[in-house]
Amino acid sequence: MEHLKKFAKTLRKEQTRPEQIMWHILRERRFFGLKFRRQVPLNKYIADFACFEKKVIIELDGREHLEEDGIIKDKIRTEYLEDIGFRVIRFYNTDVLNHLEIVLEFLYRELISGE
Image 1 (cartoon, helix red, strand yellow):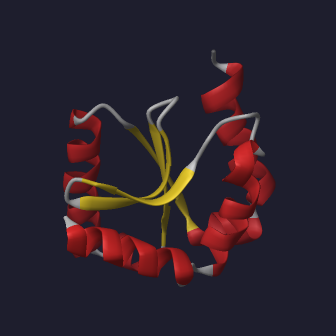
Image 2 (cartoon, rainbow, N blue to C red):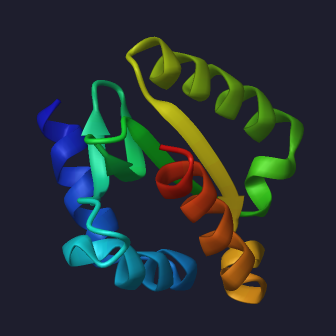
């Protein structure tokens, strides 16, 4: 577990551009007062962004997640995270970079307006 914590810390320092954009929006309760954490170790996985209040994880995926191996790993990971009580929402990096407004509208509908 200590190795995972160190790796999460490294990931926080080396964010991708899409992660930087999302973190700027989610940090400090900027997204409708919800508290998000980034690069959160959850047993054997590290979630990109987690909101414990809503039990939601937001994952930003690159091209490797479109390959067969990535799809299988993501399915196993998602099932595990759902088994421990989280809902997993995935976006592609290109969605954040090119269609941020749509991503944020989706998150608003899923996390705020659906209450």
